[in-house]
Image 1: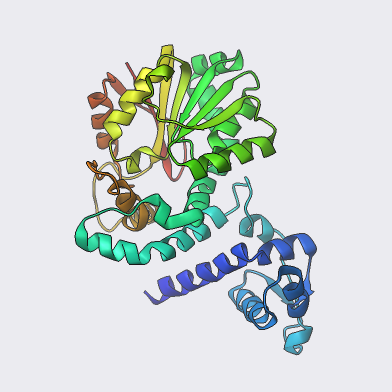
Image 2 (image 1 turned 90 degrees about the vertical axis):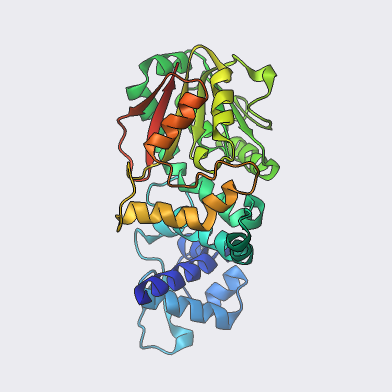
Length: 346
Protein backbone atom coordinates (compact mmCIF):
# COMPACT_ATOMS: atom_id res chain seq x y z
CA UNK A 1 0.00 0.00 0.00
CA UNK A 2 2.86 2.38 0.75
CA UNK A 3 4.45 1.76 -2.64
CA UNK A 4 1.07 2.24 -4.33
CA UNK A 5 0.69 5.58 -2.53
CA UNK A 6 4.20 6.61 -3.58
CA UNK A 7 3.50 5.72 -7.21
CA UNK A 8 0.22 7.66 -7.11
CA UNK A 9 1.95 10.73 -5.67
CA UNK A 10 4.59 10.63 -8.39
CA UNK A 11 2.00 10.20 -11.16
CA UNK A 12 0.05 13.18 -9.82
CA UNK A 13 3.25 15.22 -9.78
CA UNK A 14 3.75 14.14 -13.40
CA UNK A 15 0.22 15.36 -14.10
CA UNK A 16 1.33 18.82 -12.93
CA UNK A 17 4.36 18.61 -15.20
CA UNK A 18 2.23 17.70 -18.18
CA UNK A 19 -0.57 20.23 -17.68
CA UNK A 20 1.76 23.10 -16.72
CA UNK A 21 4.03 22.55 -19.75
CA UNK A 22 7.09 21.73 -17.65
CA UNK A 23 7.94 18.53 -19.50
CA UNK A 24 7.38 20.24 -22.85
CA UNK A 25 9.71 23.07 -21.88
CA UNK A 26 12.49 20.73 -20.76
CA UNK A 27 12.05 18.73 -23.97
CA UNK A 28 11.79 21.62 -26.44
CA UNK A 29 13.74 24.44 -24.79
CA UNK A 30 16.49 22.40 -23.17
CA UNK A 31 18.08 22.45 -19.70
CA UNK A 32 17.59 25.30 -17.26
CA UNK A 33 17.72 26.43 -13.69
CA UNK A 34 14.56 26.61 -11.62
CA UNK A 35 14.37 30.36 -12.30
CA UNK A 36 14.80 29.89 -16.05
CA UNK A 37 12.19 27.15 -16.24
CA UNK A 38 9.84 29.25 -14.11
CA UNK A 39 10.22 32.11 -16.59
CA UNK A 40 9.69 29.84 -19.59
CA UNK A 41 6.55 28.18 -18.28
CA UNK A 42 4.88 30.83 -16.15
CA UNK A 43 5.05 28.59 -13.06
CA UNK A 44 5.78 30.48 -9.82
CA UNK A 45 9.51 30.20 -8.93
CA UNK A 46 9.16 28.43 -5.59
CA UNK A 47 6.74 25.87 -7.04
CA UNK A 48 9.01 25.33 -10.06
CA UNK A 49 11.96 24.62 -7.82
CA UNK A 50 10.07 22.14 -5.64
CA UNK A 51 8.65 20.29 -8.63
CA UNK A 52 12.05 20.07 -10.33
CA UNK A 53 13.67 18.75 -7.17
CA UNK A 54 10.91 16.17 -6.72
CA UNK A 55 11.24 15.02 -10.33
CA UNK A 56 15.00 14.68 -9.99
CA UNK A 57 14.64 12.70 -6.75
CA UNK A 58 12.14 10.41 -8.51
CA UNK A 59 14.59 9.89 -11.37
CA UNK A 60 12.31 11.30 -14.06
CA UNK A 61 14.56 14.24 -14.94
CA UNK A 62 18.27 14.85 -14.44
CA UNK A 63 20.04 17.48 -12.36
CA UNK A 64 23.60 18.62 -12.97
CA UNK A 65 25.78 19.14 -9.88
CA UNK A 66 23.11 18.47 -7.24
CA UNK A 67 25.42 19.71 -4.47
CA UNK A 68 25.31 23.27 -5.79
CA UNK A 69 22.99 25.87 -4.19
CA UNK A 70 19.35 25.48 -5.22
CA UNK A 71 19.33 28.50 -7.52
CA UNK A 72 22.38 27.24 -9.45
CA UNK A 73 21.28 23.68 -10.19
CA UNK A 74 20.52 22.94 -13.83
CA UNK A 75 17.75 20.49 -14.71
CA UNK A 76 17.49 18.56 -17.97
CA UNK A 77 15.43 15.91 -19.73
CA UNK A 78 17.52 12.72 -19.98
CA UNK A 79 17.81 11.03 -23.40
CA UNK A 80 14.70 9.01 -24.18
CA UNK A 81 12.62 10.44 -21.33
CA UNK A 82 10.87 13.08 -23.45
CA UNK A 83 9.28 10.38 -25.61
CA UNK A 84 7.67 8.91 -22.48
CA UNK A 85 6.79 12.16 -20.70
CA UNK A 86 5.18 14.11 -23.56
CA UNK A 87 2.03 13.43 -25.61
CA UNK A 88 2.52 11.96 -29.08
CA UNK A 89 1.70 8.95 -31.25
CA UNK A 90 4.84 7.17 -30.06
CA UNK A 91 4.23 3.75 -28.48
CA UNK A 92 6.52 4.93 -25.67
CA UNK A 93 4.38 7.95 -24.75
CA UNK A 94 2.80 7.22 -21.37
CA UNK A 95 1.09 10.51 -20.47
CA UNK A 96 -2.32 9.67 -21.93
CA UNK A 97 -2.37 6.17 -20.46
CA UNK A 98 -1.00 6.80 -16.98
CA UNK A 99 -1.23 10.49 -16.06
CA UNK A 100 -4.16 12.33 -17.61
CA UNK A 101 -6.81 9.84 -16.42
CA UNK A 102 -5.80 10.56 -12.82
CA UNK A 103 -6.75 14.20 -13.31
CA UNK A 104 -10.19 13.15 -14.50
CA UNK A 105 -10.69 10.71 -11.63
CA UNK A 106 -9.55 13.27 -9.06
CA UNK A 107 -12.15 15.69 -10.40
CA UNK A 108 -14.88 13.05 -10.19
CA UNK A 109 -14.13 11.59 -6.74
CA UNK A 110 -16.98 13.35 -4.85
CA UNK A 111 -19.49 12.19 -7.46
CA UNK A 112 -18.04 8.67 -7.39
CA UNK A 113 -18.55 8.46 -3.64
CA UNK A 114 -22.16 9.54 -4.01
CA UNK A 115 -22.78 7.15 -6.93
CA UNK A 116 -21.42 4.15 -5.07
CA UNK A 117 -23.95 4.81 -2.30
CA UNK A 118 -26.94 5.63 -4.51
CA UNK A 119 -26.37 3.21 -7.38
CA UNK A 120 -26.52 6.06 -9.90
CA UNK A 121 -23.90 6.66 -12.56
CA UNK A 122 -21.29 9.35 -13.21
CA UNK A 123 -21.37 10.73 -16.78
CA UNK A 124 -18.19 11.32 -18.75
CA UNK A 125 -18.72 15.09 -18.54
CA UNK A 126 -17.89 14.93 -14.81
CA UNK A 127 -14.46 13.45 -15.57
CA UNK A 128 -13.70 16.37 -17.89
CA UNK A 129 -11.11 16.98 -20.56
CA UNK A 130 -8.32 15.10 -18.77
CA UNK A 131 -10.21 11.82 -19.01
CA UNK A 132 -11.35 12.58 -22.56
CA UNK A 133 -7.80 13.25 -23.76
CA UNK A 134 -6.32 10.43 -21.73
CA UNK A 135 -8.80 7.81 -22.87
CA UNK A 136 -8.50 8.86 -26.51
CA UNK A 137 -4.74 9.28 -26.47
CA UNK A 138 -4.06 5.96 -24.73
CA UNK A 139 -4.85 4.06 -27.96
CA UNK A 140 -3.36 6.59 -30.34
CA UNK A 141 -0.13 4.66 -30.95
CA UNK A 142 -2.01 1.39 -31.44
CA UNK A 143 -4.28 2.94 -34.05
CA UNK A 144 -1.46 4.63 -35.94
CA UNK A 145 1.15 1.87 -35.85
CA UNK A 146 -0.80 -1.38 -35.47
CA UNK A 147 -4.44 -1.16 -36.61
CA UNK A 148 -3.81 -1.00 -40.40
CA UNK A 149 -1.60 -4.08 -40.17
CA UNK A 150 -4.29 -5.97 -38.29
CA UNK A 151 -6.78 -5.25 -41.06
CA UNK A 152 -4.29 -6.16 -43.79
CA UNK A 153 -3.42 -9.51 -42.23
CA UNK A 154 -6.73 -10.56 -40.71
CA UNK A 155 -9.25 -9.11 -43.17
CA UNK A 156 -7.72 -9.17 -46.66
CA UNK A 157 -11.07 -8.58 -48.38
CA UNK A 158 -11.68 -5.44 -46.29
CA UNK A 159 -8.10 -4.35 -46.96
CA UNK A 160 -8.74 -4.61 -50.69
CA UNK A 161 -12.04 -2.71 -50.51
CA UNK A 162 -10.54 0.13 -48.50
CA UNK A 163 -7.57 0.27 -50.82
CA UNK A 164 -9.85 0.85 -53.77
CA UNK A 165 -11.95 3.52 -52.08
CA UNK A 166 -14.24 1.93 -49.50
CA UNK A 167 -16.24 3.66 -46.79
CA UNK A 168 -15.66 3.31 -43.02
CA UNK A 169 -17.94 4.19 -40.11
CA UNK A 170 -16.01 4.79 -36.89
CA UNK A 171 -18.77 4.47 -34.29
CA UNK A 172 -18.12 6.12 -30.90
CA UNK A 173 -15.05 7.59 -32.59
CA UNK A 174 -13.84 9.70 -29.65
CA UNK A 175 -10.96 11.99 -30.57
CA UNK A 176 -10.73 10.37 -34.01
CA UNK A 177 -7.31 8.74 -33.90
CA UNK A 178 -8.54 5.47 -35.43
CA UNK A 179 -10.26 7.35 -38.26
CA UNK A 180 -7.12 9.36 -38.96
CA UNK A 181 -4.93 6.25 -38.93
CA UNK A 182 -7.22 4.50 -41.41
CA UNK A 183 -7.26 7.56 -43.67
CA UNK A 184 -3.46 7.59 -43.73
CA UNK A 185 -3.24 3.86 -44.42
CA UNK A 186 -5.92 3.94 -47.13
CA UNK A 187 -5.63 7.16 -49.15
CA UNK A 188 -8.69 6.33 -51.29
CA UNK A 189 -10.99 5.47 -48.39
CA UNK A 190 -13.61 7.80 -46.91
CA UNK A 191 -14.07 7.69 -43.14
CA UNK A 192 -17.10 8.93 -41.20
CA UNK A 193 -16.65 9.33 -37.43
CA UNK A 194 -19.80 9.24 -35.31
CA UNK A 195 -20.08 10.18 -31.64
CA UNK A 196 -22.71 11.71 -29.37
CA UNK A 197 -20.29 14.00 -27.50
CA UNK A 198 -19.97 17.40 -29.18
CA UNK A 199 -16.72 18.36 -27.44
CA UNK A 200 -15.07 15.13 -28.51
CA UNK A 201 -16.19 15.64 -32.10
CA UNK A 202 -14.66 19.12 -32.01
CA UNK A 203 -11.34 17.61 -30.88
CA UNK A 204 -11.50 14.97 -33.60
CA UNK A 205 -12.24 17.54 -36.32
CA UNK A 206 -9.22 19.58 -35.26
CA UNK A 207 -7.01 16.49 -35.18
CA UNK A 208 -8.04 15.50 -38.71
CA UNK A 209 -7.26 18.98 -39.98
CA UNK A 210 -3.85 18.92 -38.27
CA UNK A 211 -3.14 15.51 -39.82
CA UNK A 212 -4.03 16.78 -43.30
CA UNK A 213 -6.84 14.26 -43.90
CA UNK A 214 -9.91 16.44 -43.33
CA UNK A 215 -11.04 16.11 -46.96
CA UNK A 216 -11.61 12.36 -46.46
CA UNK A 217 -12.39 12.17 -42.74
CA UNK A 218 -15.51 13.82 -41.37
CA UNK A 219 -16.78 13.76 -37.80
CA UNK A 220 -20.35 14.30 -36.79
CA UNK A 221 -22.49 14.37 -33.66
CA UNK A 222 -24.83 11.67 -34.86
CA UNK A 223 -26.40 8.44 -33.65
CA UNK A 224 -25.27 5.33 -35.51
CA UNK A 225 -28.92 4.23 -35.45
CA UNK A 226 -29.87 7.01 -37.89
CA UNK A 227 -31.80 5.14 -40.63
CA UNK A 228 -30.26 7.36 -43.32
CA UNK A 229 -26.88 5.67 -42.68
CA UNK A 230 -28.03 2.09 -43.19
CA UNK A 231 -26.22 0.02 -45.76
CA UNK A 232 -23.56 2.67 -46.37
CA UNK A 233 -20.24 1.23 -45.17
CA UNK A 234 -17.68 -1.43 -46.05
CA UNK A 235 -16.21 -1.44 -42.54
CA UNK A 236 -17.80 -0.50 -39.23
CA UNK A 237 -15.45 0.00 -36.29
CA UNK A 238 -16.42 0.12 -32.62
CA UNK A 239 -13.19 0.55 -30.72
CA UNK A 240 -12.72 0.49 -26.94
CA UNK A 241 -16.26 1.69 -26.32
CA UNK A 242 -18.68 -1.26 -26.09
CA UNK A 243 -17.90 -1.96 -22.43
CA UNK A 244 -19.18 1.44 -21.28
CA UNK A 245 -22.18 1.71 -23.60
CA UNK A 246 -25.42 1.48 -21.64
CA UNK A 247 -27.30 -0.47 -24.31
CA UNK A 248 -24.66 -2.56 -26.10
CA UNK A 249 -27.09 -4.81 -27.97
CA UNK A 250 -28.86 -1.83 -29.54
CA UNK A 251 -25.55 -0.28 -30.60
CA UNK A 252 -24.32 -3.54 -32.13
CA UNK A 253 -27.63 -3.90 -33.94
CA UNK A 254 -27.09 -0.42 -35.39
CA UNK A 255 -23.56 -1.38 -36.45
CA UNK A 256 -24.96 -4.44 -38.21
CA UNK A 257 -27.44 -2.27 -40.10
CA UNK A 258 -24.70 0.09 -41.29
CA UNK A 259 -23.03 -2.59 -43.42
CA UNK A 260 -23.08 -2.71 -47.17
CA UNK A 261 -23.43 -6.21 -48.64
CA UNK A 262 -20.19 -7.92 -47.70
CA UNK A 263 -19.33 -5.28 -45.12
CA UNK A 264 -17.61 -6.14 -41.86
CA UNK A 265 -18.01 -5.12 -38.23
CA UNK A 266 -14.91 -4.94 -36.03
CA UNK A 267 -15.06 -4.50 -32.26
CA UNK A 268 -11.94 -3.83 -30.19
CA UNK A 269 -12.33 -4.00 -26.45
CA UNK A 270 -10.63 -4.82 -23.18
CA UNK A 271 -8.48 -7.93 -22.91
CA UNK A 272 -9.41 -9.69 -19.69
CA UNK A 273 -9.46 -13.27 -18.46
CA UNK A 274 -12.09 -15.61 -19.84
CA UNK A 275 -13.38 -16.08 -16.27
CA UNK A 276 -12.97 -14.45 -12.88
CA UNK A 277 -9.97 -15.46 -10.77
CA UNK A 278 -8.16 -13.80 -7.89
CA UNK A 279 -5.57 -12.54 -7.38
CA UNK A 280 -5.10 -11.42 -10.97
CA UNK A 281 -2.16 -10.37 -13.13
CA UNK A 282 -1.26 -6.72 -13.71
CA UNK A 283 -3.50 -6.37 -16.79
CA UNK A 284 -6.55 -7.75 -14.98
CA UNK A 285 -5.77 -5.41 -12.07
CA UNK A 286 -5.52 -2.48 -14.46
CA UNK A 287 -8.82 -3.29 -16.16
CA UNK A 288 -10.65 -3.68 -12.86
CA UNK A 289 -9.15 -0.45 -11.53
CA UNK A 290 -10.31 1.41 -14.62
CA UNK A 291 -13.77 -0.10 -14.30
CA UNK A 292 -14.18 0.80 -10.62
CA UNK A 293 -13.04 4.40 -11.10
CA UNK A 294 -14.60 5.26 -14.47
CA UNK A 295 -16.11 2.77 -16.89
CA UNK A 296 -18.78 1.17 -14.73
CA UNK A 297 -19.97 4.52 -13.29
CA UNK A 298 -19.99 6.00 -16.82
CA UNK A 299 -21.97 3.00 -18.13
CA UNK A 300 -24.52 3.42 -15.34
CA UNK A 301 -25.02 7.12 -16.12
CA UNK A 302 -27.82 6.16 -18.52
CA UNK A 303 -30.90 4.15 -17.69
CA UNK A 304 -31.62 1.42 -18.50
CA UNK A 305 -28.05 0.16 -18.60
CA UNK A 306 -26.36 -3.19 -19.08
CA UNK A 307 -23.87 -2.08 -16.42
CA UNK A 308 -21.03 -3.86 -18.18
CA UNK A 309 -17.85 -2.07 -17.06
CA UNK A 310 -14.34 -2.56 -18.39
CA UNK A 311 -14.13 -6.26 -17.48
CA UNK A 312 -16.20 -7.47 -20.43
CA UNK A 313 -15.27 -11.08 -21.03
CA UNK A 314 -15.44 -12.88 -24.39
CA UNK A 315 -18.63 -14.64 -23.33
CA UNK A 316 -20.35 -11.28 -22.74
CA UNK A 317 -19.30 -9.92 -26.13
CA UNK A 318 -20.63 -13.09 -27.77
CA UNK A 319 -23.93 -12.78 -25.90
CA UNK A 320 -24.35 -9.15 -26.97
CA UNK A 321 -23.45 -9.95 -30.60
CA UNK A 322 -25.88 -12.85 -30.91
CA UNK A 323 -28.66 -10.81 -29.31
CA UNK A 324 -27.98 -8.07 -31.88
CA UNK A 325 -28.59 -10.50 -34.74
CA UNK A 326 -25.08 -11.59 -35.65
CA UNK A 327 -24.60 -15.28 -36.31
CA UNK A 328 -21.02 -15.66 -35.14
CA UNK A 329 -18.30 -13.96 -33.11
CA UNK A 330 -14.72 -14.52 -34.27
CA UNK A 331 -11.81 -13.72 -32.02
CA UNK A 332 -9.05 -12.51 -34.35
CA UNK A 333 -5.48 -13.59 -33.48
CA UNK A 334 -3.85 -10.23 -32.76
CA UNK A 335 -1.23 -9.51 -30.11
CA UNK A 336 -1.87 -6.67 -27.70
CA UNK A 337 -1.53 -6.45 -23.93
CA UNK A 338 -4.74 -4.52 -23.34
CA UNK A 339 -7.17 -5.37 -26.15
CA UNK A 340 -8.92 -8.11 -28.09
CA UNK A 341 -10.20 -7.72 -31.65
CA UNK A 342 -13.52 -9.28 -32.60
CA UNK A 343 -15.08 -9.82 -36.02
CA UNK A 344 -18.89 -9.94 -35.89
CA UNK A 345 -20.28 -12.10 -38.70
CA UNK A 346 -23.71 -12.76 -40.17
